[in-house]
Image (cartoon, rainbow, N blue to C red):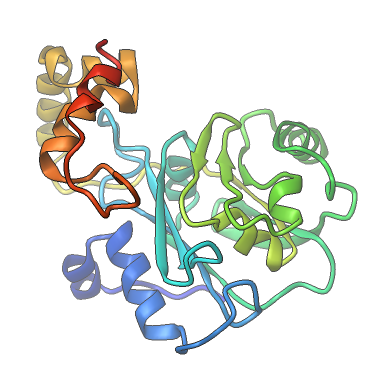
Length: 254
């Protein structure tokens, strides 16, 4: 089923992790099995996902984690999130369990569940290639799992476009527990924005100030080692300790 999100809700929870947190808190019963049908897997887009701004293509995936037993969310890049927005959706909530392997196909607001028995056992690259050939469109974006997720490995990832991973909390295992192999998306309608000229100005400003994001583009997440150390975000001894002075020595800059 598809439901519209009202403006007040969107302004209050914004999107992404805000939507994920709200839906999981509202809909999950205490004590459920993370790999059982009662768990829910939520995909949610950020408020500017799909808008032509640098760094705006991310989405959030969340569920009760099979790895920790608690709430988990994972942020992931790639083009899948923007494609979902162009297809007319801000979030997907997956619940229950399919009787056999399936994948979800979303095309310009139309959604259908398709058999994925022939995809079960394939890695994510093979899965994406097969779906694109099957549906006749090489620009389809796929978020899917490989054998790790199928076999409920508790730290399995969900892969967007082969190279971007929702890697935290075992979201791939939750997806596998629902017999959901992939979510394939294709959309052709960009979201309307209230102030398109302002978006253009922000984009031009960001592109002109490359020093703000160059290290991330060139060096990856490791470029922020020192900043995360200062903020207490490094899981030193599983967050038992808050300081590791030599962390800077293994930063991407080094």
